Length: 260
Image (tube, helix red, strand yellow):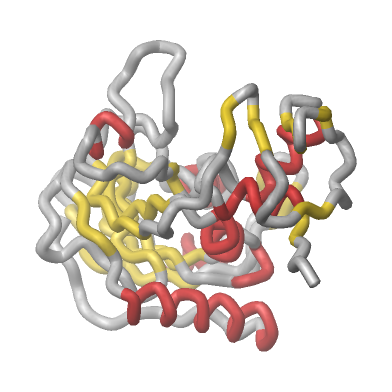
């Protein structure tokens, strides 16, 4: 019996986009199966079916997983309407597969960024229920203390939404320039979240870097460069996502100071 899979899963597995975005493509009518437009999300297909997205036939690619040290002044998107440099420009022709960013970092934020053509993997890494910790180093205005940052432990209200609890450390204080280096660990990924959270407690961000995604960092990877994740790293990330989703384990602070 021919194995059937959901259409959006097949599109994501082909590296076209994430599963969530594949669902949007289907409902907007740009996906065809065997020459017929399909808009039903429950549609299942087999390996024998011919699938087209925007008139382009899809084919199954080998999965690729990349870790990039994203520089500031670079957009986390496949294309930019203002013709700014994107993370895809940094990859260029070095990777044959059609990868795309897993989540995003702001234009002026540097650090760890994952890219892949595996839609299922991307979905697991981004979904809030997986509670994957993301560690940021923020140089903020003012002298931040445990007292001023304490509201972050329970969550702060931003645009009508209360953020999930975060973990923080005050790493160093620059009294002369009236700034503080803060480490913040979150597991959500809302727009401008770290900047908004710190501003909400009175410490606007001057400079920001994502230091780690789960256990991954950019040690040994120059800014603007990338490396392939190992099979063991990919397995560990997926295992962590499954564990966090089922157990809802709390995020934990890390030890040690970092220069920034």
